Amino acid sequence: MASTKEYLDFVLSQINGIDITYKKMMGEYLLYANGVLFGGIYDDRLLIKPTDKAGKILPKAEYSIPYDGAKPMILCDFIDDGERLSGFIKSILSKT
Image (cartoon, rainbow, N blue to C red; front, side, top):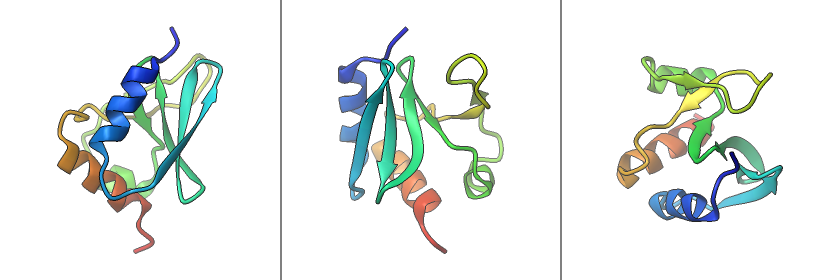
């Protein structure tokens, strides 16, 4: 199932203070901040790359596979909380 533009727009509207761009690829959306791929929208789910920093911030995160044959990614199940979502993404993208 492909992701909808409406879901992408909703997720992007929840993220404040970060310039995010996206690329549509095979019905899904890859998400970038400052030219760095950090996650994507797959089957109307926000999935984040499982970096060490992301794992430390969300140690009990649920993981999900974006498509057959892919490695698991962190399922971001709090997209309704814009403040938390923005803070999480800012934290995983920070250099410190």
